[in-house]
Length: 332
Image 1: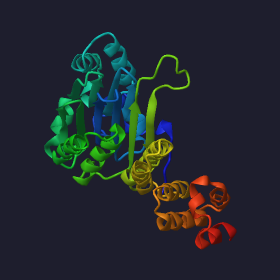
Image 2: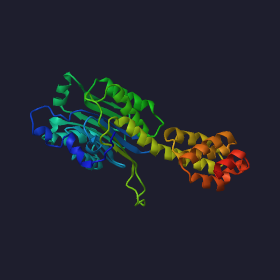
Image 3: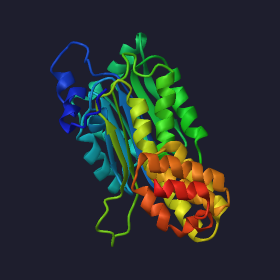
Image 4: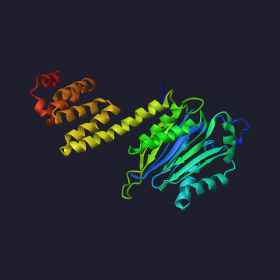
């Protein structure tokens, strides 16, 4: 099982001239993706899955506060910066898609989607790609603040399932909704040739004074894996668990211990690491569930021995420090 991050592998998905150089069917036609905008957070996101290696490097493009783009089939990486520039000039995504494809002599090998900060979408699928769909499906669905698109798919059910999953995730972080959409598409057969790689990119505007950030909140790629969906979910959960832990700490500092426990449980369900388990032990101690606190503290110490010293000096565990089991844990 391998997880490689090799940016140059995007060439394998078809550069801007690949489809022009051969009359044979382009072997890299086969990708499904989703572009989305979350008006609650101003996040723009784009996610992709494909059989070839390096789909995330080839397909995904976004600029915070402007647009997100998926360029696939015969991927043309110039579409990303061109689309961003045109959106900044005031063109709509539909106008952008028409302009960049009209100007592209290789447009018959392209599929592209653009979404802007108003949730407007534009999608293009070349007629030649649609003509190939007599055996495998190619097409798109544009919904409120999102679009899903794909080619050489198992069936139309792939994009329908992606759209349904994204809509059903309202209220979740956009990256989780994007992952849900990829999983749903894969469950319906996804890429007709199987699995290989996937990626998620999420950007958010940052204050002009924030020179340390480029607004890229999530940038995950699995460039080669026997099950990129499972690996992507694992990596994404590690990121999400950190946010739940941060929220749990904030609530605990406010004395809202029961609410903090709920958030820490979410973090632990996503990423049952020793550190997060130690945090869970603290939250249980703060609500007076000492047996649960001891149970999780013991498992955390088994996995990471230095947590023993931390527990011994942690005032959160003060009411437990005379317990025989607590003394045993920190004295072993």
